[in-house]
View 1 (cartoon, rainbow, N blue to C red):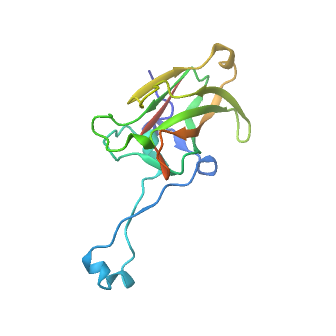
View 2 (cartoon, rainbow, N blue to C red):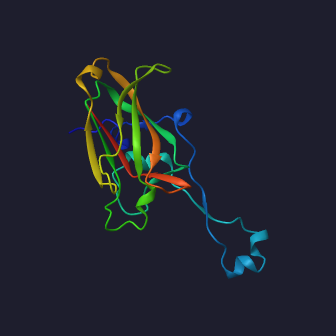
View 3 (cartoon, rainbow, N blue to C red):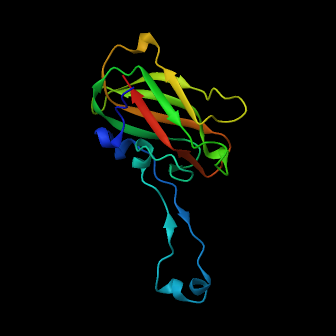
Length: 173
């Protein structure tokens, strides 16, 4: 199925509708603790929101947003009627912490610059733990108006208190 959110196909993040990145400050090395931290800024790890619309699915290669709630907005490669969305997380066998995976998600279709309408709610089909890939069909009653974008509103994750990781979102139509 074509993925209209894919970055290489023309999908783009809408920064004004996307939550802030989670910043993880890396502990300084021994040299840093001895005084170099005054001359060299501490490194920090962050991945841009574009990671969520790129095909890299290796452990740790996700977009991490700050907190358990937030949103990711994507301008689609072209205007479509959204029929399905796919949410992906890295394979549970290689990820150290599954608590950061999104659990409850609400999908909104963007009809124009400031015109959004709810498309569907996703409440994490896996009752005990997240799955690596889940595809959700949009109800036929919501497949009426073409959308230029999609907003993934994350309402909760599987328990991580500081961040929620989105490995990949796909939009089909």
